[in-house]
Amino acid sequence: MEGNDHAIVRAVLAGDKEAYGALVARHSQNVFRVAFRITGDEADADEVVQEAFLRGYQRLESFESRSEFGTWIYRIAVNCALNMISKRKVEATYQIGEATDLAPQQVQVADTAASPERSLLSREIEALQKTAMRSLTATEKTAFILRHMEGRDTTEIAEALHIAPNAAKQAVFRAVQKLRRSLAPLRVTP
Image 1: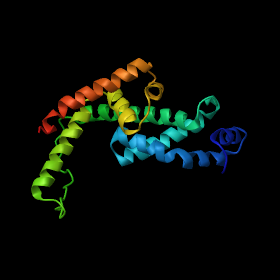
Image 2: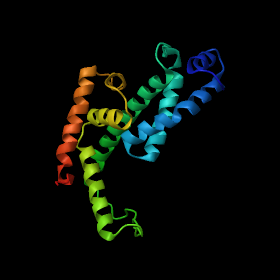
Image 3: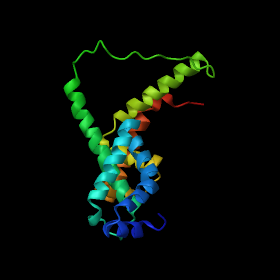
Image 4: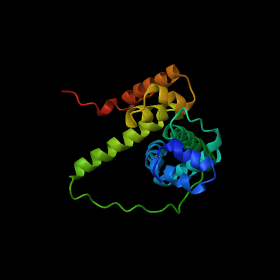
């Protein structure tokens, strides 16, 4: 369906339920990208996309046309992703201490393009990065991702996280400081 988002929203609200598919097609890639960056898992990101668009559809009447639909659904997706992270942490808390001898075996295939030393270094760097990102609070991680990976400004981050712009700026700053401290061992000195 051609047209701008506001026209499509009006069509959906007027009874054309099929028109919502145009909004999904138009915005799902951006929603998936932010969901994947926040959750770190493709299946979780797909689930967030579905949940965000479902919530958006259910709450479409509350959409105020003074903002863009893309920004509105993006904020819903960020909230869904944060909810999923919180839910996963609670689930992980209940699983601590359970020994699993039936864990799936991982097969590692040698990378023919990189030397063993380079592969080892790459894995160590990746592990340090993941550990550093896990050290952030959910707000700090999301603020960092939205700012430095999604290129969002402080106002958009504040709206997505439902916090004051100054708090959003502080969350990004704290995240950067924590990441710098955690990743300091990687710093190359001349």
